[in-house]
Image (cartoon, rainbow, N blue to C red; front, side, top):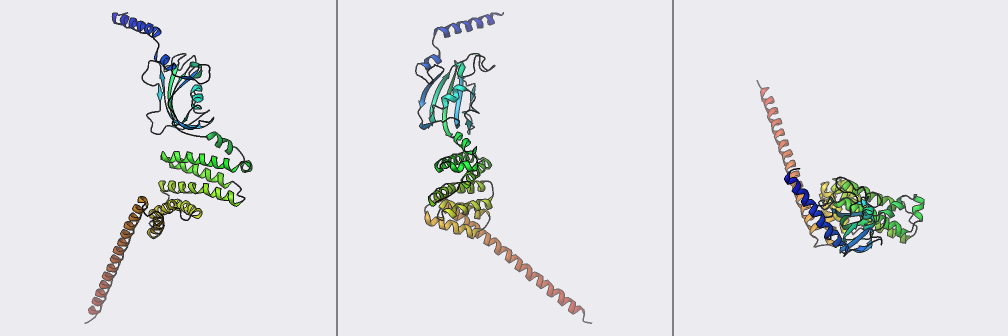
Length: 343
């Protein structure tokens, strides 16, 4: 062994001995953490409290997280670099036992730290080469949002007949959760996935027997935002005809709904039906005269309509001029043929 190698080995040995004598960073963290299960296996520190109910079992969770080994400044895994982290379902996508149990103690918006003993993390074997054997790991977790997908899964597993026996309030909760999934996809520009979620929610509402005016009214109230969401999604997918269809369905429920009128105005504009677009937007403007989106789109429609009329005028003018030229040529040719017949 070279001199430098021997010195490096001695330094590592000294550092190890110092670590054994001096409490490490994890030991300092333990002093300010709470024991989640009572066995010391999962310790938790709330850095920033959240609000609302805790994450339910089998929920789908949107979160940022980072995992650290002791004495390491760099995480061995993290999602903080992702603009749109993946929605993870408990019991399926979250494979670390300690992390899943820890998540169910958290609330929306909460940021917490967890220390997991090996039996709640990577076990005695670890996960070479990144996680050593019997390693205690630190996780920093922030809950961005969560959806009770377990309730959705249970409801969808029922037959249509069984779904009709479930309280209407439960159906509306399920529909709202499915719509929230669609909204999440929409905000991530995954418009096809968003459309599938919205249509799934429509199907669940369509399967419901609507006996009584009160039930029908609640179903209609739940349908309205779905039609509006679908109309906007179809616009993003460059399908103005479908966007117009869903916009009109929303207007059947609420004829004065400014969002529906605005969506129909957008669809008509894409279809170059400017008069219809103007009619929808002027009606919406009457309801919300200071809405900048409505007013800006109305100006855009007016400009496009004027350009369209100008183009038609130019086209008709050219056609008229061409006809005059053809007639003049015709008379000239005819006159030549007449004169050519004289001796």
